[in-house]
Image 1 (tube, rainbow, N blue to C red):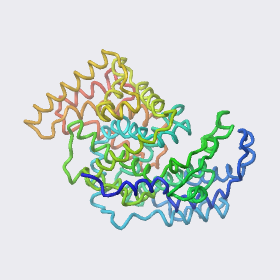
Image 2 (image 1 turned 120 degrees about the vertical axis):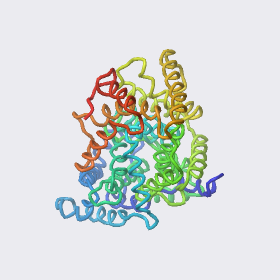
Image 3 (image 1 turned 135 degrees about the vertical axis):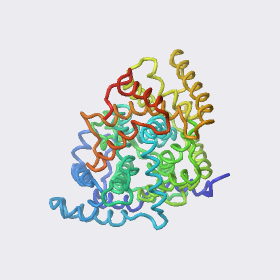
Image 4 (image 1 turned 90 degrees about the vertical axis):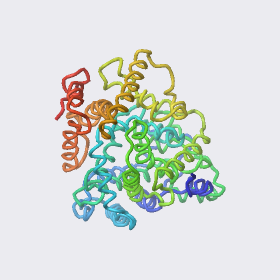
Length: 479
């Protein structure tokens, strides 16, 4: 089966972004003067001081968008925000905050229940499948590489992704005024528009028009000297990086739709790979909830998939198209290496440190593993332990399901791994996630709920207790 979107439409979507968010940022920042070819970091910092100040104001404002109800009348609570910026952001929120007409609250609620039930396992799949799949498409990897956030601040990238996923998938995240999902997505949408404006030194729509239109866009924005100097901020790095418009626009519609699939489809595919398949109605509910998120993020409806068959076909086509546009040097192996070094760093057992990487190989498959260069040598003891563990799990699960359809040792083991990664990377009390208090309380409630898995027998839960509380994996006690 193939997805209904023709290749020609996917090609055009590389030159389409998000007019609403893009215009909002363009109205706030105004036009960029053409930088001198030899502009240094000091030149950029001084010549564009007004833009950097406006960016700081925008970041300060959107940091106050903590819950969905708070999107209403926020500007009255921040009277010191310059009026042009306040007006532009108020109009943006007013136009962007509504759920689409096709949103089905019952499906969204079911997706929230699934996330709550599978929480730690969901985080394992986020770390070991969804995030790595984002880096397989070269242009997506290039933008992340430009910011330096993954090579230099990998845990920041992980935590910022989780800071979006948690509010979206918590109970009422998209539908309740007390939830935080809509507010968080609107922040991320605006940040993507900021990235595009900085990389292109213009609004995307203006950049395409100046380059000859989407059908024949050409033009190279040269890198500036500051890019080689080593810009001290993400904004300076993006501005100085340069971009080849023949590759399409950064953070374009196709790339955004692909990223959306990594959160919905890749998660469900990972569950299938682990032998934890949902029924079709539940899979459709998860895809539907993420499609609602996609609408809020400015993604066009025709680039979304409603079933697993559609999602598989669209994901594989997008990935294949992305691979064909690789321009050296390849940023993907460096990003993946930084991610898996971070994950290994929070696992205390030496033999188990490669387990996240080995799990990713299983979840991603050989082609994506090769793209990310995670298919190289791993210590034989770790490979053997992981293979034996997964093999034994498969046999035990097959036998256990003869007596109980819900039995799953695979669920327990991946939850053990995920619990440790989550507590170390996301729930460290010395640097808690920046979430609204209500959302943070829900997260802690879910953590406590994940501690006892009703689908595993009492003896399995006791075994899990051994590894997550008192055992060699322990580093953060179960709350």
